[in-house]
Image 1 (cartoon, rainbow, N blue to C red):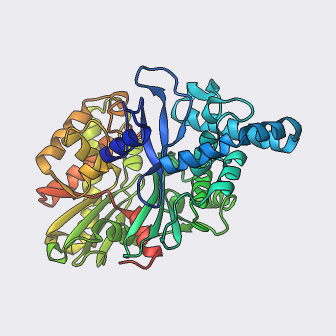
Image 2: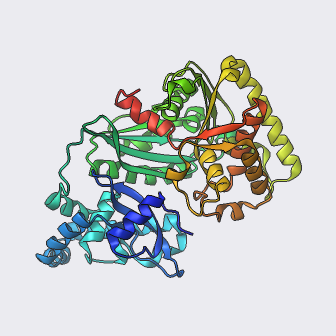
Image 3: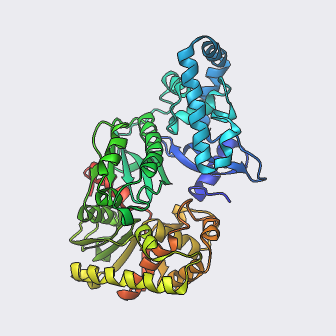
Length: 467
């Protein structure tokens, strides 16, 4: 099933292509004027046939500019260089290999379908190479196209800033720029579940295999940010890295791609940033606010009377990955396991209530994180993930309980097959939902304001001195 980023993006891409897309996609790069620039296609089209181009250039202005380059004979010149320049040939072949690996990340059996644009050798399509470069591919051809054509759009945006939120379960990228009116313009927003913290709760160490898996995603993020004009990428790591006894393994993986060490923040700072991202722009009169941020390794509870200003906060050792590893061992979860899960959650809620005594005074409960947004997507009956329809909408306790009950009866494979479920989340969504529902029940919360903006946006606001 398609996993488009926004319903409005579906319409925009349809207009850009002049036809309906034939495969599910996600917008991963936007032009400075706001419309889709590069989409990431799913490996299979709507008929179940292989789709050869992972990254597709959709902006008509960019497409026309590249077409003019092709019409001038650039493909022939590059292929001649490919035939006679061993160093250039090796770089192009690496781009094809890396593109095949990126497709295989979404579908392992697709590795053999070719590289950039489905090509195995040489240069076939400059559009595909340029799209791959903008998406973060190590693509010498795409970089050459960029140097010839950019800027595609003249803009008056300020400096670009890129932030990475390294969580226990997911690795996320946000690239933004400040417009003349002070608003932030989103240029890239991506999330890949890398499961960096798998097993950390039990072993106390980061698994080198998980670090390597995460590094491949991070490397592409860094190249994408630089292709979009962000000179520095700020990497912030949370629970899994701070809890591990070998964080240097992760730090080294980051320093292979950026010039500064990742900032490994403590739970209090994580809570502050989550509150900033989750409440920024809300009306002051709706306070006090309680923000709940359910992560893979930890869950933060934060109270503040004004948007963006955290006053009381605590980070608990309660996350969807951590608690799943402690309590859930069968698929679907057995009743006894769910009982144990609820007991573990209750213990952490006791801790939160003591640490954040103002938790009962909150007027507006804000739920951030993938658990909350996925629950709302299911509650709303959405056929695809659509942040525009989810962001800052209300999720009632009855709907949250209904969704949790449905998910508890499903296998992980069945949950993963739901069109609104991000790849990799199906195995831990029950625990995340149990934390959400348990919090609402414990503190008598009737409804949650679900926010798509969380610590990732908090990092960007903080870096820009906003809020």
